Image (cartoon, rainbow, N blue to C red; front, side, top):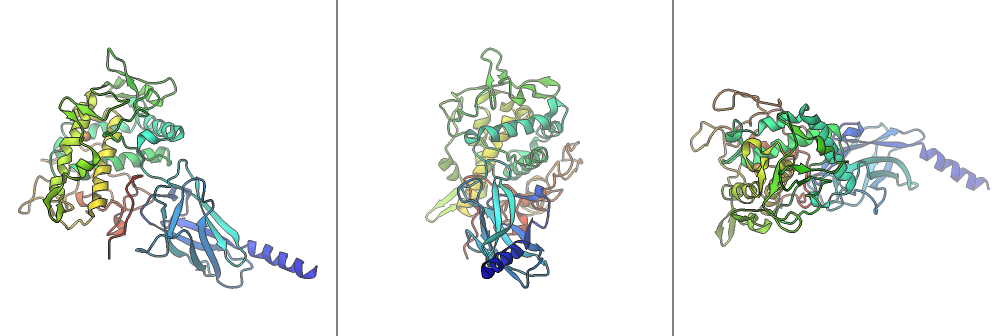
Length: 448
Ligand SMILES: [Cu+2]
């Protein structure tokens, strides 16, 4: 009897020990979002009461069957582990490790993943931290909850035409056109544009990630009254269900969205008068410049601006079909998330993250040196409007201010350069991580 009681009281004492996790050095819940790229995380004993020495702990997913899942790294680069053994000093000094979402196990709701710290001496949990494995997903596969939160955040950002969204609409115009299109900076400029918008959506609802419209496949769940709307056959004005927050969408002082597809949205991929968008595998072949061995180069790959990108735009009539008005339509951002995903997936497939290699981006350098192109399209140039430059050849206004900051990463800074968009996962330079990922594009360390 005496022996059993003393064992029990010993366990109770050990349970007093508490561990606390901080993400990227930030203790608030607002920082607990992770994608596939490893994020620096710190764990420390927050209440070492009754511990008599360093405490050996194991980090793990609280449940391996539900919600988002994470993997652990003791350092980077390292192989991903299901759990991680660490020793926490009694002084409360934090111990750093790295954490990432487990590929293909994203969250579907905020805080549905849980990291548990277990005291290995008695197998008791001494801390549980909820988080979200938040990645950009195929819009056609979103749950009703994910879709509802996205649409509500978009509607709030626009606020019937009176909100912050007006800046985004006013960035993508005739004046901004030369900053963004038909040149080397097309992919990075749009990556920054989407990131800025996504961070604003996340300020409204941190569980939202921008989904993508996979335009080379039918997306019957996207083109519905509950999601992006269905056009009225006679006017082309998009109709929404009575519960869809987009029903009040307005831009330039006019309510509604005009968008009429040239293809069957329930059964077909995007198709213009010239024909369908090229497929994903065809897109990845655009960069091929030599066949044996195969060499893939950025300057060839960026031809994807024409097809599939341009083709997807002109698969409709209405505002999305012309550059000056395209960003009036929220579908624009889902279309462009897919354009960005194609670049991201090509970068992963061909390992094109080196900001100093012409195979990853060209022209390298800043405008004004030999062999460079228009300012804003060289790797070292800053990008309008985030640089707030309004002297020629830049546009005369720079709507929206500098780049929205993030608690998850310091990159790309307030005035991003073209090259800051290239290593978006921090594959080669961990501090370059921009804080987004796509559901089907993994993070992979470079080969040794
Ligand atoms: Cu576009």
